[in-house]
Length: 323
Image (cartoon, rainbow, N blue to C red; front, side, top):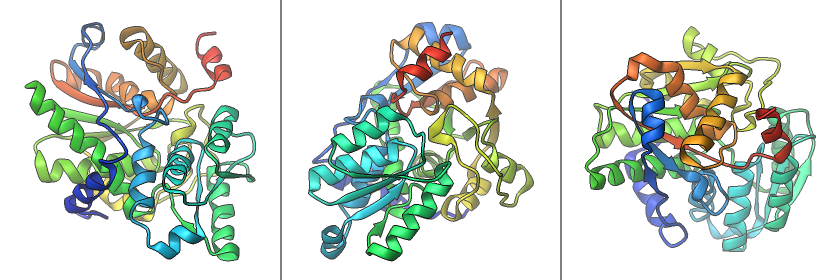
């Protein structure tokens, strides 16, 4: 299999994160199990300081930079959570951070990024156009690019999430039969597969993507990269239009299967997460649950790990989900 990082990279990232983060809970809920017909272990990354798993990615990247890179500062493109993670890390480590977001981005995420002291640049119509803005600033200002996917340090940080899941499951006496993971760019899923391949290769990993932003799903099915003209989903954390060099081959080699879910299925997963766990989830944060529902009978009776990867949903979007 083709992996952009090694398990040792994940272990190294975990050591760097230890001074800053504590493990997030891994919990099960009888009401969720009853609704789905399987035993679900929910990893609560919504309990992170930025309410999303990508704080791991940001800290893993910034703690590994060279002194000169830290001095000049970093730049990233995001729809929110990657930027929040980097802004938090920059605030903690006193590293200048510039975050590029598309116009019309989640205003509450924008406010939170600014509140952590990062410079916010609003330009472009979607995430992939914000990436072009990021690259322009790299060229003109000499900033260190921290891509949300095409960065080994980021993927290693994401891998610490699954490393924790396996450690916690063992402590709880749980034996995981499968894992269902959201795919936006692939850092979470490739990080998960890197760890599982080393520690528990018998566990299959299933990917899930939004039907309104299916570029990686369609590429996976066709076994070659494609680029779409738009990504149209309220789950902004997975709203990407293309594959990414560092993760695509690993997704081809490692995923047991890949499913897509509709906007209504994502909305239903948000509602179910709130109803059964009393935890708020943003659209991308509930994608693992939406994928598990879609997989249905294939995982009936099994113990399945999913990630509540973020809860940074704005009030207007949440109101639409319950309308």
